[in-house]
Image 1 (tube, rainbow, N blue to C red):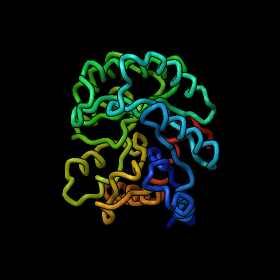
Image 2: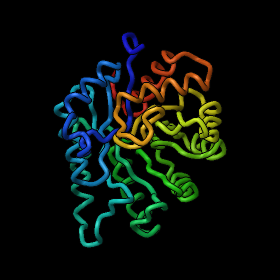
Image 3: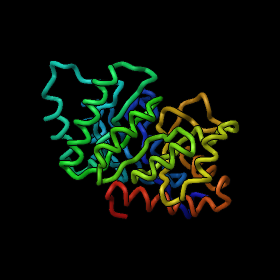
Image 4: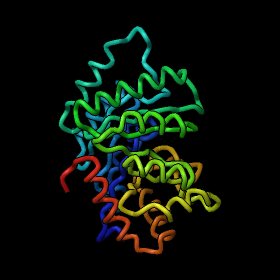
Amino acid sequence: MSDTMQFFDTHCHLNSSQFDADRTDTLARMRDHGVTRFLEIGYDLDSSARAIALAEQVAGCWAVVGIQPNHPVAPDQPEWRTHLTALAHHPRVVAIGEIGFDHYHQRASVAEQEALFRAQIDIAATLKLPIVIHSRDAHADTLRVLRDVRHPYGVVMHSFAGDVAYAEACLALGCTLSLSGPITFKNNRVMHEVVQAVPLERLCIETDSPYLAPHPHRGHRNEPTYVVAVATQIAALKGISVAEVAAQSWRTAHTVFGIGT
């Protein structure tokens, strides 16, 4: 399958300690399966710097830098914005993320999460970069902020989880939906309906490695190689070829993140 196809994993965390023992082997497996490009995603200042370092070292890797709502900055650290902006100027950085709301873990108040979210959208707007959204149990707040700011440089809904109505609301705001392992779960009928309803050109594929492993690897460590399973499930649900999904998601990722093919 992968001999003639290339896949782009638009969201992974290969700097995770879960890959310390076999990161080089993981990269080799990816390429063997046609996963030749990927985005390494930051979730705080340290991981964002490490994402850039990986992008400098590995061909086909770009970095996304940002502060995720589960890793909020302390009120006495006003220099975070200067630091993040400096990181975002790096030529291997293609977006600000992952940023947004997390009402499941709720490690900061809604007001604190929103202030951090809006500040990072402002950085992205200044630099004309797309944003990558983390939204867990926070559909209403996410849509409220996105409707208010109307970010014009691209919005990617990371590991999209929601029903068709939420998907349509996101699409109306110009968002691209990035799909991950849970769409392969047999009983995830809500997401199966989303895949069938959303135009292929509005979809990206991702793994969120080492999290959210697809069937039949559920419960084990995920890795970018398994993005092929995500593409395969999209193809099955849409009644098209995996090659079509690979090609269109490849084009969409390059367009949204401003990367030359």
